[in-house]
Amino acid sequence: MGNYPIPTDKALSGVRVLDMTHVQAGPTSSQLLAWLGADVIKFEAPTGDITRQQLAHVVDGKRQESFYFKMLNANKRSITVNMKSKAGQEVFEQLIRKCDVIMDNFGPGVLNRLGYPNEKLHELNPALVIASIKGFGASGPYSDYKAYEPIAQAMGGAMSVTGDPDGPPTISGAFIGDSGTGVHLALGIVAALYHRTHNGGKGQEVEAAMQDSVMNLCRVKFRDHLRLLGGTAELAEYGPPTLGMTYVPRALNDSGGGHIGNAVPCKPFGPNDYIYMVAQAPVVPVLLKELGLAPDDERFAPAGARNKNQKDFWKYVAEYTKNYTKFEVTARFNELDIPCGPVLSTEEVIADPHVAHREMWTKIEGHPEGDYYTVGMPVKLSLGEVDKKYPSPGLGEHNEEITKQVCGFSADDFKRLQEAGAYTLPPKK
Image (cartoon, rainbow, N blue to C red; front, side, top):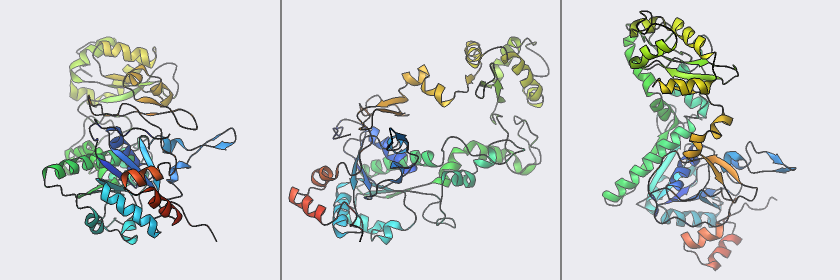
């Protein structure tokens, strides 16, 4: 923790973000901006972001700050503000004047009830980019609905196409509703900043809704929906029959793409001892030969026959893979240019040499509770990324620094604001 230098030569250097978001979707977005060089100020209530203690663990009898918070709030500074006090509002308004972006993922109308509708924010700073994450957007029939990750997946179409066709709809292990929406919002913010630069310095509103984002990430499933032609056509690459269906079904591990694909077991047959492979048409003859079949086997060589007989096809593949580990199969199939990869557990992913080479499991040093690891930056820039990942900030760690350096208040002002309750809750009676 402690002070760290605000980068001056990165992609978003010079951009200051007031990050009022909490939990996952918003902090995902603002952390990406911070890693691109933006000065991200995490604006918290005096009680702090709920994820500081959510799913926390205990070490030597002491409750630690949660990895949930640590992994989503690197390279940020923290200020606590009591928005229900006049002194807190004074600090907030000055921050609005000094920032380029404000981000929030409050429920509908929260800032309005505090006296800060978008019109008021733009009155304070006409150049401000106002970025919001909502479950279903600020308008529409569902705008007042609460949203969590599984609800966004359910209502965005993802759950209905995930899992066993004979079982219930299934949540994706990847948090496409939360983190996916955060990535979409980051794109919108960067676009709005570019627009401001080239269109007279005017700010605008940017909104990313979780349902919308899930739909976008399910785009190929909606492609398949159109391919059904209202029930008059089929999805040949799906294992279960689809002719007559008017919606895209769940299909377990079928690829649902232009080529059939599946997860196939390998020895020693543990829970993740599988490879996922795609029977890409140009290499099917090579694959058939490797399986001990004729390269022109009429059951599998033609695409139409292979789709029709894919249940038997995967049995032949499984007879082959049962003799090898997933890593041995992966190595051999890639030698033959057959698309294939091992199913990796979280333990295997973080120990993977390619992941290490890509710096996607990154050590964060300097936290008072000890060093920790986090998932790295998924977008690589040759010039624009920060040189170092810093630990998540302590609650209100930078109250004085931000008040003086960003807001421009004097030391006497800071003391006055502090005594007036700008940064803390009033004592309980």
